[in-house]
Amino acid sequence: MVKIYTVKEVSKLLELTEHTVRYYTDKGLVPSVKRDKNNNRLFDEESINWLIGVKHLKQCGMSVEDIKSYVDLCLEGHSTMQERYEIIIKQKAIALAQLEEAKRRAKYMEEKANHYLDIINGVVPDDMNPRDWESINANTPLKKRTS
Image (cartoon, rainbow, N blue to C red; front, side, top):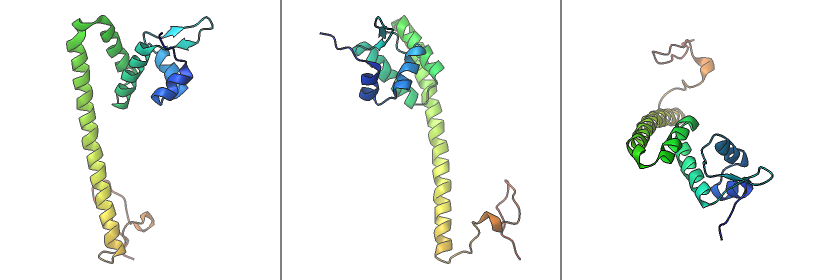
């Protein structure tokens, strides 16, 4: 017997909000979703598999529009394998660029934290309070008032 799931059950199963499940189905990202006589969405294992795939692609930063293109290519079959591969490679490059940006942010915060420790330990004077800054120039370090 085929198990059928409601939006509520699928949202709990996949840890998505009910709104998100409905949104994904409305955007055509779950082509196998069915409807009952009252127009409620019904999900079988295939529908859940589509949602799992969509969830993973979304978590990787892919836009709903790009996911829709990917789903459409999947529906066309094996002949679209190269195009799907290229979508994944493009998304991988985006993810790697985001990772590098995250590393830069983390390095900046580490330097800030170390600077605060130097202030706390009396190694350098407190120059971290914006009210004490003389001027702001994005291209040069901030300077503390001399008065």
